[in-house]
Image: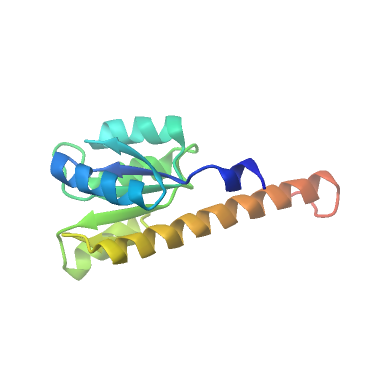
Length: 151
């Protein structure tokens, strides 16, 4: 087993409401995930750049730096651009959802979150992220061995 497969997946949860953070911390922790928290967009960007989580759960409606702007900034930084973002929002209109995809989110869940649905979406994105990393590693090895040409 590789180190990647042995370590717990890491999820960064970003929400300005402490009660929401508590619920999500408990739910994701019980599901076997390592959970990091941030209460605003600026600290989320800093924490993501440092910790490189496997996934970010990001609240849309936050004061100062909202979820959309936070996601745009995450996607603009090389060290965080490839981290998948799932938006959490009470907004249910189509335009709000589409805007989330436009700024780089891979999925969204509506608040209040449904535990089973959230865990299914989180597991799917973590699996995809792990597969992307494995593919990148294999491609790098193949290039090094001369099996695949450099781009």
